[in-house]
Image (cartoon, rainbow, N blue to C red; front, side, top):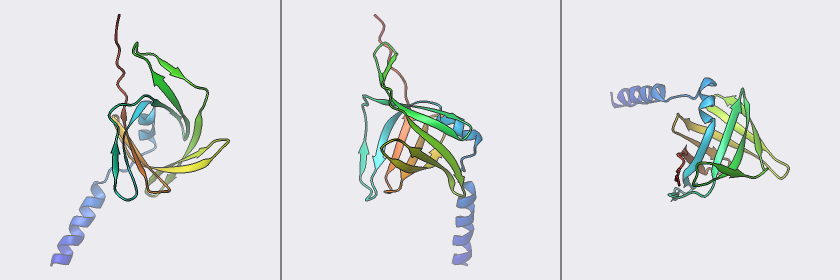
Length: 139
């Protein structure tokens, strides 16, 4: 009886997981700041202040990520560096395949909603992001 109950709870919890759909990928568009990093050993690094923000733009199954530097007037400074990626659908969700002149890597999109997302890389490091809210100091 206990095994049947455990199996039923497992099936119920598995069915309740929110799978990321292709339509959800547009939620990645916009400005994001790192919130925390969870290392493979479980150690967590929390970020309370960020000097850089990631701007992400997705169209169809491709996109790019660019580092930007927020200013106090609500504008951004930026560099010319861009990390392009392609999204690939897998049974467990989507993978982001990056390729630059210097490197290639893959991140698995673990969670995504309008205010946050997280990805895990091949080293089992999970990066959690929150939607960036600019500080606008008027003169």
